[in-house]
Length: 150
Length: 139
Image (cartoon, rainbow over all chains, first blue to last red; front, side, top):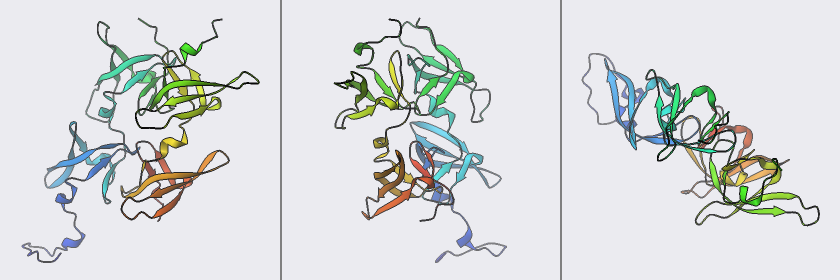
């Protein structure tokens, strides 16, 4: 790295080091190629990077353990962040449109959920669907069972 | 009669791909004149997008509010971004080459260089929001 003066007790090769500034503004994609957002900030503890903040609609902290690659033009995750499920449409096995995902029930901050809460519309009670009843969880959600029309 | 549905049960319904993606609204039913069988449906994909014909063999079932497709129509891949496993963008899908009813190659072009490249389908790792190539793919 030219024109950088180094002050360090040890011999340092800056060319082989990664600059955190390079992460800012990088696009982040899920493991299926869904665009999640851009890196807005980096979180570190004891001088080690712990994860980064992705900004799109709202802010999302993603632990570095969920990153599969960060050497290219974009950051590729090894997972589909479960928070992306919110807002997706839900259909039952009979093709009945049940509503949209309002929220997730999660026990921990891990990339997992126990159930989804489906908003069914005005004057109708929200529906809680356990994870085991979900057959497809991708662009939208398709359940593996039929819900009676209520 | 319980197993019978009418055109009202199909027309106007959303067409859903196997991954839950909403392709559009069913606007037409196609019926073969001689054997009087349904041959497929036409999906209105929305403003400024061409209508999409889907053959009956790609329809999984007719649901209450939706029509489920068994496979994503190949045309939906056009315009999709292709990324390497590292997240580098190679371009967007411009066309595809079909062999034995499956995609053999994706034809991609880069908006900046305008060069056309052929990516074999077996180099693809995942197709979701984008097309991600396998880690061992080399340009």
